[in-house]
Length: 446
Ligand code: PLP
Image 1 (cartoon, helix red, strand yellow):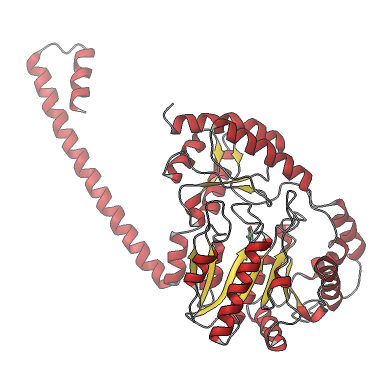
Image 2 (cartoon, helix red, strand yellow; image 1 turned 45 degrees about the vertical axis):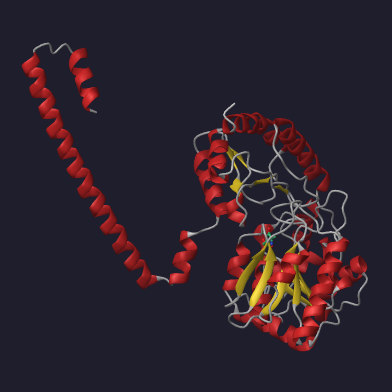
């Protein structure tokens, strides 16, 4: 700053040396004053923030304060994208929010059923019997087991369903194991109900590392939670992996004399690219399926999903009673009524896989040609490439300079990667490609 001041003096032609010295002294004094003001402001701001934190501790729980502080990267990036969109065109790959409209049939059925009397009232906490019966018969057709309406509980999306399951099965301090990378809300869904989330590594290709799961199991393990097709990797776990996992869980369930549940979160089941998703019920009796229509019907805002338990699961009646009660006392009471009436008409509806596949192919082949390392997703609408530099958060900011918003792998418990949610239009994806190309060049210093 001092050098700058001297330069200014020369530029403005202050030729007299004495007057120049006086001006320099005056500027040094000004600088000191500025430093003091800055120091006072910093102290004031620290005091203010400390006071704010102290105040907030009186208002909300420490657990929620911590959760807010480490809040989801997905939401953070989504909100940043929303702000930037006000100024310029942004390629927003942050959120798994399907851009493709729900099937026309959904709107037609809404119009048809809206006049039905009695559909807006309280109902059994498990959901309408007719809806559960329709879901059971769909599952029977899809997987070939003897499901009945009693095995099904309609829920407020898959997120609501997972909370119902963990509320029901967990005692404080019991553990739920799940593979990394993982859908970030899992940590909260487990800790919400006093459980401990135990995260285990996957292999290089994001397949299940059965040895790592084996090493993590203790007598305190209550469940293993898997998600296939996976968010954020798009990986579908193969038959062999599920079989090995089932063998492992059978072994430990016997050893500890209690079932270790396999909770299978499958909201992306219908979105696959030529790979079939193995049926967990076929391999393991203590399985609980949680799913929703958020992704395959593009209706995440409608909050509708269900839980299905294996027809022969251990102590089924008790488990079901627990799940139904949890649905009620978590405050959901029951899944949204109008959607429950509509879902039976849409169970066999196809997902727009062709369009997602086109996007996957366009994006993945372009990224590879630019030098990105990635594993092509088998399903869902995410790809999880390696960050070209170690610091994934830094790389995410380089992409932001290209108006591209993605989520760092750290947000999914796996740094060194980043997630692209390709549920945005083909046209936008195409126009974003140059930005991806520039970003890798910039990151590698080319
Ligand atoms: N599970 C996974 C793996 C997800 O990706 C999501 C949403 O993104 C959910 C559960 C929650 O789904 P829902 O909107 O049906 O609650």
